[in-house]
Image (cartoon, rainbow, N blue to C red; front, side, top):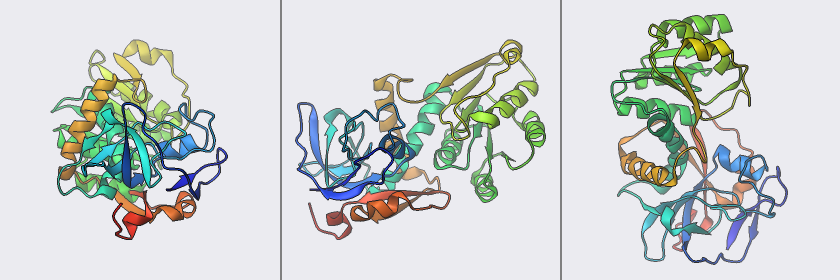
Length: 327
């Protein structure tokens, strides 16, 4: 089979021939139809993720859409380096296979599930957001942040505050139904003032940025809280703006705040599986504005370095699929 292969952490993958994978007990060989190039995948291939390990060469790719030997179209995930999904065939845990709803395009599913499950888990598993609740999404203009906004609206949030830098994307989020938008292109003082006005009463903050924006936002939300005893759950999902923050201790004393993470190890596996299944069943109803940019697998090196517009995500397609040849 052919696959994308990383020979050194940080290098772009090469398109090479490899032996077909063999399934161990509890695993299934899947004919891959589409595999998403997510930030997680890049981090693993760069050796900058806890799951990167030290085995090289490796095939990148955490999840994908494929077809089983019995012909069932499935989403699969949980691949561990050096085995990955950016190949013509992949070995996946049998327990990870989730049949796709009828009519759902494989490339679209491969592009959407990863950013959307991070939002779904952060909102409903870690933040415990209820219908009628209020949420601030910090970093709302990225793919996962946009998904968080739409999923919060879909589940009946009474207030959604979208915060980010991309003015065009913020405008689109407003048209999607976000009740308030705040631009991070303003000064810290202006951002803080806006957040005190519109976000002091939120139940949860879904934070994809961390770093300086989180410092500003946390202080502002705390300052704007009309009832300091009302629980605020701050859920750290990403760290696009920096790996650490300076946390003023008085914030922890003057409001009822619970700061937690959402990621690998933060939720029980059975809860993650249940969340994935419920999310995938919901996908035909959701349009988060994320566009799957389908690229043939043999162009993986070019795709790896491609600059994408907001709302786009590269999906690698094996040549037999791209050309319409059956597996």
